[in-house]
Image (cartoon, rainbow, N blue to C red; front, top):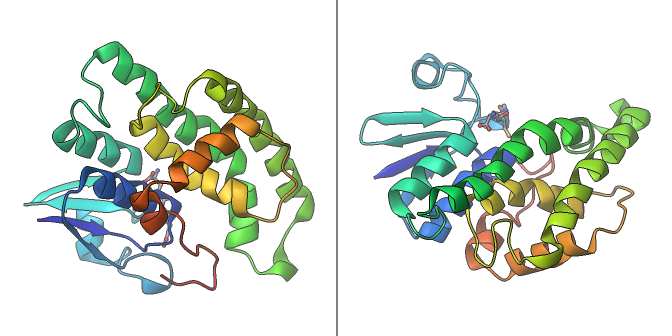
Length: 211
Ligand SMILES: N[C@@H](CCC(=O)N[C@@H](CS)C(=O)NCC(=O)O)C(=O)O
């Protein structure tokens, strides 16, 4: 049985939960991180020395780093669907996982931490606004890419979409000054039609929501 350790409102845990939902692979989730603690305890740290969530465990095999977990699950359970069999097609999807982790989220991090994990009186509005502007720049590239395709790698959902979905949900639902990105919005509308996306990503994520 697959075990996922991590609170259900974490942007990174949600990638894994949504991936498992799309693959229809059974799993058990255990709360960890944030108000739940657990992730700084010796047993957790011995399996994931970063002390961050998510942590995936399958029959003694432990894995951390959300995008790596999504790649592993998709390769193991979704070859030919979430994980395209053709290496070039797969790379064109995988590229967007790196773009999410290495470009979009670093730009968005100050806005996410400021608006979701910081009480209003301690927020830095200039830092948040700069983060939103930087994120809009990174997302304009994704928006242009989505102009003539339904999903990042073509006409079907793949791992690149899974890595991006929970970040874009926050982008589209936080109270921020967003430029119109119509192709990104249309892509997100398509994600919302998927029950696993609604179940695992479209959930409360603010600081006052512990789970
Ligand atoms: N690069 C890591 C980042 C993991 C990460 O930053 N996780 C956050 C939650 S989104 C965390 O564990 N924060 C501490 C906590 O929740 O206690 C990944 O993608 O898995």
